[in-house]
Length: 446
Ligand SMILES: NC(=O)C1=CN([C@@H]2O[C@H](COP(=O)(O)OP(=O)(O)OC[C@H]3O[C@@H](n4cnc5c(N)ncnc54)[C@H](O)[C@@H]3O)[C@@H](O)[C@H]2O)C=CC1
Ligand SMILES: O=C(O)CCC(=O)C(=O)O
Image (cartoon, rainbow, N blue to C red):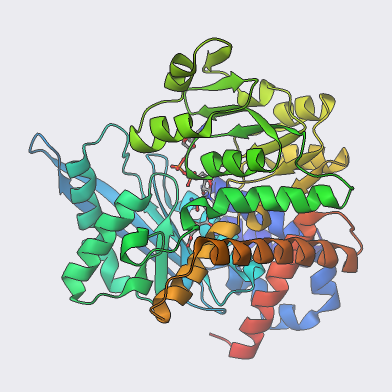
């Protein structure tokens, strides 16, 4: 990293102390940018990078709610509106006990570049709360969502900021959030949230889109080496929205997905994960992955507390959470012959793990490119809401496919143009950066 970039980075660290994940995300982007800033002095003159690292607005608020035993509970809510040069802030809400400002900012920062790569007119933002939905009743989740929206509603809108789901936020939570927004504002403003139920303004394919998209991205990377998903042995981490739909798509393309996990352990099913059973346990019953092994029966192992990356794979799809795949796991996967890694989650590989994959010549698709299918389909949902239309599954899935191929090609072409063929990390960071930077230049110092 050259001195100019290093100085800006140091300043970002100083101004945002204790936010390790945000520092990590900024460092990863800056490491790609040297060739761009030396080719384009106008970006430095307009302080584009400094402005990109400073969110346009950060909102932190109290979320009081009453639990089933009548006790008052307090959580903290966040919405970081990072960059609106390309369109309204867009990005999910995460409900998980680990959520704090540093996590929301890393996610919001990544989202800016990701959304730019989709080619859709959306800026970047992210939000959430340290609320833990695990073990909560339906009524508690509803009351929490209503309280969260009672503050958030004044900051969002279809032309301002459009939240969606992320960890711990799915169609149920989006329903409660939308209901409260509608009630408070007296407006049926469909485009204010995405990930809605398909019966009331949601888009077909949005639930599947992130997982499907990550697999399509992996397929495009494999295609550059004359291969495909067919016959690959795949390991997926997580067993939530992204993981389940990645498993379904990979198997429909001829791969065998042999393992999946949750935060308590992992299962190995050599004959291929039964997606229907996994969906029932995780989505309908909100159960644990250990139940999958119990119900699937003989030949399926459950490893409590284990590391899913101990399972051999030719294709790895980390789809759970940030920094879940470290250098040791990466080294092991390389040793055992992994050929492609596509990040379904946001920043699931540590910086060291990413470097190990890249040095070993493994095809590596970073999250901001590989998991962009979810937010891209959210933008398709906004299009349908704006035109009061609803598209067929086939049409929407075809659009998702075109967008993923487009993102792949943009990353590959940009990496080549900047002298790093095959480096999708550099390609994604540079292409996303240039798109946002040019819009910021055009809009003046704001
Ligand atoms: N839902 C979406 O459309 C998008 C999600 N993402 C990212 O994908 C990742 C997963 O999100 P979702 O599937 O939506 O969330 P989810 O809440 O549906 O599922 C999360 C899953 O990860 C598991 N998990 C959490 N921590 C874990 C750990 N330490 N080890 C193993 N498993 C763990 C949970 O048990 C759960 O199965 C996150 O990084 C999220 O930011 C990225 C783009 C879009
Ligand atoms: O669909 C969206 O707006 C949010 C998706 C998201 O949070 C992500 O891409 O990480």
